[in-house]
Image (cartoon, rainbow, N blue to C red; front, side):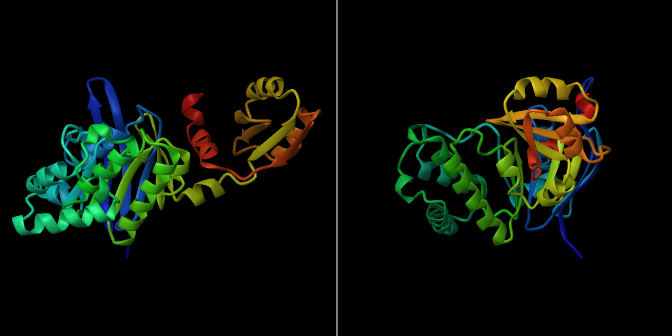
Length: 305
């Protein structure tokens, strides 16, 4: 039987009349990378803060690492790591000074601190940056320091709230390689993102929109469910064709990507390629492999309409 690091049932948080998280259910397997994908305002950060015990749910039940949250949140604190959306380390301190300070906060024994700090400096490629103040670092370097701090006390569960929003693609890729190293070693990771390429790297993914979970499955299964519903059009007159298609009830989305128009049909449409070829008289049409952007558009179509 699969062991779960997180279970949530009916998790809800209201701020006055605003429902930020609306009765969501979650099951996160131990040792896996679970992703929240959604735009700003979809409830990702609020959900993470409730799962960490930093915010009290308005409704619902939550268990994290076998502990009832928020009742046992204080006991959970030393078993989890948390990287906030906003960079929160001391930029006027060096890497080493930040690590030493946080080692004391985490309650690491004096004899254990030096060894553990040396380990994370090596693990995250920070040895040459140990004496550099954080304000003099790039965004990617600072995120590596933040990850080193979050894992300093060897947490079994790691929460990452849009951890790569301020770094370039190469540093994002390197950062994710570190996450897979942690996952391989047994660390459970819950990460929020609005990058489609990052979401596709997760073992399992929940798509959030306006506080609700619209889809929850592996990225591969989510994309496979749209097989046969995505058609790409190439040729001239794509802007006029897009305007024509967006007025049709059977079209979920039509987005131009370079010299191609990517069209997603609803699930009730039969033979979408034939239907589109009839409308695209001066263009070439072919079925395309669904991607996570298509999944997101399909998942939130009803809400947007």
